Image 1 (cartoon, helix red, strand yellow):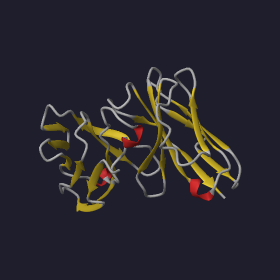
Image 2: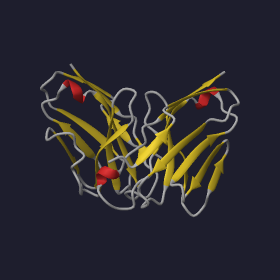
Image 3: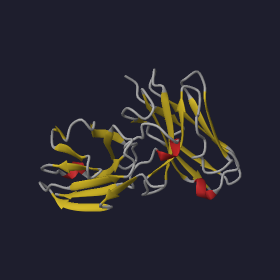
Image 4: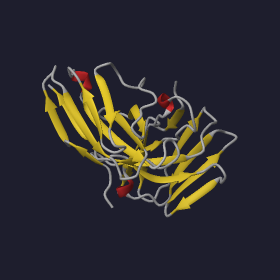
Length: 114
Length: 114
Protein backbone atom coordinates (compact mmCIF):
# COMPACT_ATOMS: atom_id res chain seq x y z
CA UNK A 1 0.00 0.00 0.00
CA UNK A 2 1.55 3.23 -1.19
CA UNK A 3 1.94 5.77 1.61
CA UNK A 4 3.47 8.64 -0.34
CA UNK A 5 3.11 9.89 -3.90
CA UNK A 6 5.95 12.01 -5.21
CA UNK A 7 5.86 14.21 -8.30
CA UNK A 8 7.19 14.93 -10.80
CA UNK A 9 9.25 11.88 -11.69
CA UNK A 10 11.83 14.04 -13.45
CA UNK A 11 12.47 17.73 -13.78
CA UNK A 12 14.80 19.79 -15.95
CA UNK A 13 15.41 23.46 -15.20
CA UNK A 14 17.85 26.12 -16.24
CA UNK A 15 20.41 27.40 -13.77
CA UNK A 16 18.74 29.96 -11.52
CA UNK A 17 15.32 28.37 -11.90
CA UNK A 18 13.13 27.27 -8.99
CA UNK A 19 12.27 23.58 -9.21
CA UNK A 20 9.42 22.42 -7.00
CA UNK A 21 8.97 18.80 -5.96
CA UNK A 22 5.82 17.61 -4.26
CA UNK A 23 5.00 14.78 -1.91
CA UNK A 24 1.44 13.80 -1.04
CA UNK A 25 0.79 11.38 1.75
CA UNK A 26 -2.15 9.28 2.84
CA UNK A 27 -1.35 8.32 6.39
CA UNK A 28 -1.96 11.10 8.90
CA UNK A 29 0.24 9.41 11.50
CA UNK A 30 3.38 11.21 10.43
CA UNK A 31 5.18 13.82 12.50
CA UNK A 32 8.41 14.23 10.59
CA UNK A 33 8.67 15.19 6.93
CA UNK A 34 12.15 14.89 5.43
CA UNK A 35 13.58 15.34 1.99
CA UNK A 36 16.66 13.32 1.06
CA UNK A 37 19.12 14.08 -1.72
CA UNK A 38 21.01 11.34 -3.52
CA UNK A 39 23.91 11.72 -5.92
CA UNK A 40 24.88 8.87 -8.26
CA UNK A 41 26.88 6.19 -6.48
CA UNK A 42 26.11 7.57 -3.04
CA UNK A 43 23.59 6.84 -0.34
CA UNK A 44 20.81 9.37 0.28
CA UNK A 45 21.50 12.20 2.72
CA UNK A 46 19.05 14.38 4.58
CA UNK A 47 18.61 17.73 2.87
CA UNK A 48 15.93 19.39 4.95
CA UNK A 49 13.08 18.27 7.18
CA UNK A 50 10.06 19.79 8.88
CA UNK A 51 7.85 18.93 11.84
CA UNK A 52 4.09 19.58 11.45
CA UNK A 53 4.00 22.38 14.01
CA UNK A 54 5.36 24.79 11.36
CA UNK A 55 4.21 25.42 7.79
CA UNK A 56 7.54 26.39 6.27
CA UNK A 57 11.24 25.99 6.91
CA UNK A 58 14.10 27.53 4.99
CA UNK A 59 17.73 26.44 4.99
CA UNK A 60 19.88 28.33 2.56
CA UNK A 61 18.45 27.93 -0.92
CA UNK A 62 16.17 25.07 0.13
CA UNK A 63 12.65 25.59 1.44
CA UNK A 64 10.21 22.99 2.61
CA UNK A 65 6.57 23.90 2.88
CA UNK A 66 3.94 21.84 4.62
CA UNK A 67 0.19 21.84 4.04
CA UNK A 68 -1.40 19.69 6.70
CA UNK A 69 -4.96 19.99 5.42
CA UNK A 70 -3.91 18.95 1.91
CA UNK A 71 -1.59 16.23 3.29
CA UNK A 72 1.22 17.51 1.16
CA UNK A 73 4.71 18.86 1.58
CA UNK A 74 6.95 20.38 -1.03
CA UNK A 75 10.61 21.14 -1.67
CA UNK A 76 11.59 24.39 -3.38
CA UNK A 77 15.13 25.04 -4.55
CA UNK A 78 15.86 28.72 -5.05
CA UNK A 79 18.49 29.87 -7.55
CA UNK A 80 19.16 26.26 -8.57
CA UNK A 81 22.68 25.30 -9.58
CA UNK A 82 24.06 22.45 -11.72
CA UNK A 83 25.43 20.95 -8.49
CA UNK A 84 21.85 20.46 -7.32
CA UNK A 85 21.37 17.86 -10.04
CA UNK A 86 20.48 14.75 -8.09
CA UNK A 87 17.58 12.53 -7.16
CA UNK A 88 15.33 13.76 -4.38
CA UNK A 89 13.17 11.56 -2.17
CA UNK A 90 10.49 12.33 0.36
CA UNK A 91 10.37 9.82 3.17
CA UNK A 92 8.00 10.53 6.07
CA UNK A 93 8.35 7.73 8.62
CA UNK A 94 5.15 6.48 10.29
CA UNK A 95 4.79 7.13 14.00
CA UNK A 96 3.74 3.55 14.50
CA UNK A 97 2.47 0.56 12.60
CA UNK A 98 3.92 -2.03 10.32
CA UNK A 99 7.50 -1.57 9.23
CA UNK A 100 6.34 -2.11 5.65
CA UNK A 101 4.90 1.36 5.76
CA UNK A 102 8.35 2.88 5.98
CA UNK A 103 8.57 3.86 2.32
CA UNK A 104 10.44 6.42 0.35
CA UNK A 105 8.74 8.30 -2.44
CA UNK A 106 9.54 7.12 -5.95
CA UNK A 107 12.11 9.87 -6.38
CA UNK A 108 12.47 12.95 -8.57
CA UNK A 109 15.46 13.16 -10.84
CA UNK A 110 16.41 16.83 -11.08
CA UNK A 111 18.69 18.15 -13.78
CA UNK A 112 19.84 21.75 -13.61
CA UNK A 113 21.30 22.92 -16.89
CA UNK A 114 24.24 25.34 -16.84
CA UNK B 1 32.64 11.39 13.71
CA UNK B 2 32.38 8.12 11.84
CA UNK B 3 29.33 7.62 9.69
CA UNK B 4 27.61 4.44 8.62
CA UNK B 5 29.95 2.06 6.86
CA UNK B 6 29.12 -0.94 4.69
CA UNK B 7 31.22 -3.75 3.35
CA UNK B 8 32.02 -4.88 0.81
CA UNK B 9 31.47 -1.90 -1.45
CA UNK B 10 31.09 -4.21 -4.43
CA UNK B 11 30.30 -7.89 -4.61
CA UNK B 12 30.11 -10.05 -7.70
CA UNK B 13 28.82 -13.55 -7.13
CA UNK B 14 27.59 -16.46 -9.15
CA UNK B 15 23.97 -17.42 -9.19
CA UNK B 16 23.21 -19.88 -6.42
CA UNK B 17 25.95 -18.70 -4.06
CA UNK B 18 25.29 -17.17 -0.64
CA UNK B 19 26.41 -13.64 0.19
CA UNK B 20 26.75 -11.65 3.40
CA UNK B 21 26.53 -7.88 3.49
CA UNK B 22 27.71 -5.99 6.53
CA UNK B 23 26.61 -2.70 8.05
CA UNK B 24 28.32 -0.76 10.84
CA UNK B 25 25.90 1.90 12.09
CA UNK B 26 26.72 5.09 13.92
CA UNK B 27 27.57 4.30 17.51
CA UNK B 28 24.61 4.71 19.83
CA UNK B 29 21.96 4.58 17.13
CA UNK B 30 19.15 2.32 18.25
CA UNK B 31 17.55 1.88 14.86
CA UNK B 32 19.10 0.26 11.81
CA UNK B 33 17.45 -0.13 8.41
CA UNK B 34 18.17 -2.12 5.26
CA UNK B 35 16.99 -1.00 1.82
CA UNK B 36 17.43 -2.26 -1.71
CA UNK B 37 17.76 0.06 -4.68
CA UNK B 38 17.71 -1.22 -8.23
CA UNK B 39 19.30 0.84 -10.98
CA UNK B 40 17.48 4.13 -11.41
CA UNK B 41 14.77 3.11 -8.99
CA UNK B 42 13.58 4.21 -5.59
CA UNK B 43 14.39 2.62 -2.27
CA UNK B 44 12.69 -0.63 -1.34
CA UNK B 45 12.47 -1.08 2.42
CA UNK B 46 13.58 -4.52 3.57
CA UNK B 47 13.79 -4.63 7.36
CA UNK B 48 14.58 -2.55 10.40
CA UNK B 49 16.07 -3.29 13.80
CA UNK B 50 15.31 -1.67 17.12
CA UNK B 51 18.29 -2.72 19.16
CA UNK B 52 18.89 -6.35 18.23
CA UNK B 53 15.25 -7.04 17.50
CA UNK B 54 13.55 -6.98 14.10
CA UNK B 55 9.85 -6.44 14.89
CA UNK B 56 8.65 -7.11 11.35
CA UNK B 57 10.42 -9.22 8.74
CA UNK B 58 7.60 -9.18 6.20
CA UNK B 59 9.42 -6.67 3.98
CA UNK B 60 12.11 -9.19 3.10
CA UNK B 61 11.56 -10.24 -0.57
CA UNK B 62 11.77 -13.98 0.04
CA UNK B 63 12.86 -16.56 2.58
CA UNK B 64 16.30 -16.51 0.97
CA UNK B 65 16.86 -13.18 2.72
CA UNK B 66 17.68 -12.94 6.40
CA UNK B 67 19.21 -10.33 8.66
CA UNK B 68 20.56 -10.12 12.14
CA UNK B 69 22.02 -7.53 14.42
CA UNK B 70 24.27 -8.24 17.35
CA UNK B 71 25.29 -6.14 20.34
CA UNK B 72 22.98 -3.38 19.19
CA UNK B 73 25.57 -2.53 16.59
CA UNK B 74 26.73 -4.44 13.51
CA UNK B 75 24.14 -5.94 11.22
CA UNK B 76 24.47 -8.59 8.55
CA UNK B 77 22.11 -9.12 5.63
CA UNK B 78 22.43 -12.61 4.19
CA UNK B 79 21.10 -13.68 0.82
CA UNK B 80 21.09 -17.40 0.20
CA UNK B 81 21.07 -19.05 -3.22
CA UNK B 82 21.38 -15.70 -4.98
CA UNK B 83 19.39 -15.04 -8.12
CA UNK B 84 20.02 -12.53 -10.88
CA UNK B 85 17.07 -10.45 -9.74
CA UNK B 86 18.89 -9.90 -6.45
CA UNK B 87 21.35 -7.65 -8.26
CA UNK B 88 20.99 -4.17 -6.78
CA UNK B 89 22.58 -1.72 -4.38
CA UNK B 90 21.88 -2.63 -0.78
CA UNK B 91 21.78 0.39 1.50
CA UNK B 92 21.96 0.47 5.26
CA UNK B 93 20.93 3.40 7.42
CA UNK B 94 20.80 4.12 11.13
CA UNK B 95 19.03 6.66 13.30
CA UNK B 96 18.92 7.48 17.00
CA UNK B 97 15.30 6.38 17.31
CA UNK B 98 13.18 4.33 14.91
CA UNK B 99 10.71 6.29 12.77
CA UNK B 100 11.43 9.59 14.46
CA UNK B 101 14.72 10.97 13.27
CA UNK B 102 16.95 11.57 10.29
CA UNK B 103 18.34 8.41 8.77
CA UNK B 104 22.07 8.36 8.11
CA UNK B 105 22.90 6.21 5.12
CA UNK B 106 25.96 4.22 4.30
CA UNK B 107 27.49 4.22 0.81
CA UNK B 108 25.85 0.92 -0.08
CA UNK B 109 26.99 -2.45 -1.36
CA UNK B 110 26.58 -3.03 -5.07
CA UNK B 111 25.69 -6.69 -5.58
CA UNK B 112 25.94 -8.25 -9.00
CA UNK B 113 24.77 -11.79 -9.51
CA UNK B 114 26.07 -13.37 -12.70
